[in-house]
Amino acid sequence: MTDSSPSGSNPDEMTLDQIRQILAPSLPEHVAFDGWSDQALALAAYQHKIPIERARLAFHDGRIQMIDGWFAAVDKALSEKAASLSLDDMKVRDKIQTLVMARFEIMQPYREALRRALSILMTPSHIAHSSQLSWHTADLIWKLAGDKSTNFSYYTRRLSLDAIFMATLYVYLDDKDAELSNTRQFLARRIQNLMRFHKVKSWFSRPEESKFSFSRLLGRLRYPDK
Image 1 (cartoon, rainbow, N blue to C red):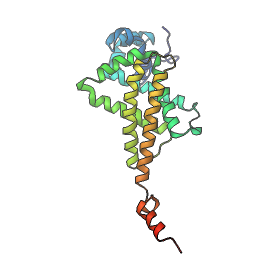
Image 2: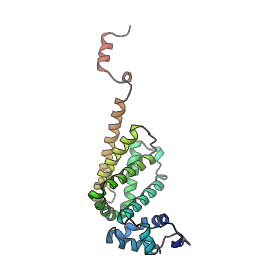
Image 3: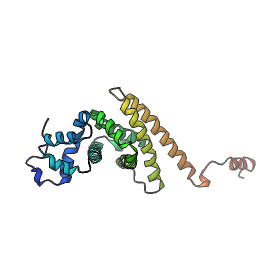
Image 4: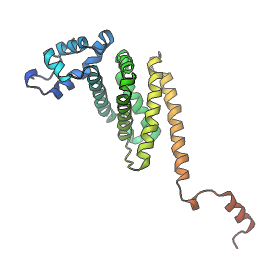
């Protein structure tokens, strides 16, 4: 194991937030063997030369706080990676697909840790919290894709992507292909449906005079302009 804590930093002088930010990315390395447990936290703390007492204080809410910390680290990594993805040159659907797949690729080395995290988050006592996390993921992806909507579309886009992300997540966990081809194909189909839905929805929201009207067409054919 390597020590990647800040050079010259003293754990006793770090804030609890700083300790969480240091330990969170390393937790999934140990979760595959020890679960989201105190043992995994102890190994991550040892890796970064942080006293276990300080580590436990930083994650005093236990495994849910550990999972939250890791997901926050994944979000940070995704935000940093987005800058190198040339998103400005892509269509919206391609931006969304690229960002979702980038998030999966960041988590790829730790799929067992993700599987264990979901088994905890999907229990009845944590369903509400799980929903908040998936909403946050959808919101982040739309924002990284350049979405600036503030009206009702803000919510419908995120709700739709939330559902797509969660459905794709389970395909991803079972995808044995090294290139995640099954995940990519499944995601592409779902995003295509999402784009088609929003296109139809925007058509229905257009002014009446700009929509196609069969009765107006018949009228024009019967009484053509002079």
